[in-house]
Length: 334
Image (cartoon, rainbow, N blue to C red):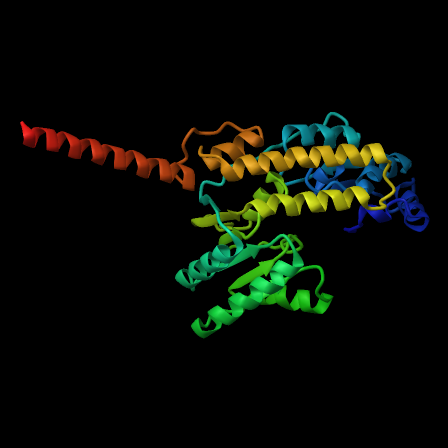
């Protein structure tokens, strides 16, 4: 079993090794499996140009191996892109379903100071539980982790942090401490999570709006993997959209070898995904239904386990109670 980054596939030494292995008399290359296959599509949330080389690499082998592609979050459009861009031949497509009924979804709009207080109070109220707090920037991770550590330390709640700006050893130690429950709350950028299969994560809080629904659902889905109830809460503000657009512009300016028209199209698609992320954050309708419809799956009008559905139920109960009191008052006057 060999793990290879797609950026290495066409390096002369590796390509020569793979071709020799796949040739007659070689050790054989029976299967090429592409993980995070949504990266091959500009409609996917993590488009990487190197993924476009995978098709060329497979075609260069003396004998074509079986090719498999896997991803946790792909819309129908992305799935079609995966098939075309990887040159899959009459593939068997398996979609296991996106609905995680044990997850509660919630959205709340608030400023940064209110967010910090909300996260602090939530963690204190759930001090025996393990959770992740995702932030959009390293600076925010450092600041929030420091504030939470100071506020929660007296309660015995241990807080860790994780982002790509930390050294390898520091990141490994932080990740291991979280998996071993030595750290109860991890404050992190989206660099944290690949390969994390910790079953008892009871909450995932997004301190900032993610750039798209694919990223959000993948990160939120790290909660409740044991099948027990877990909560996924998105805290957002107007500044989040500006931050995401800043990153989109930086990607446009980056020297990644892509033609200007390709980068412009990628930016346009990123803006469209951001639009749906914003719609999700502000909708008054069922959040689970919104997510499932986005991924092309049948969805209920009301799931009964999201902030919008519960708010609607509470409003309906208030209206019933109001009508009952009005009726009682009218009867008294009669």
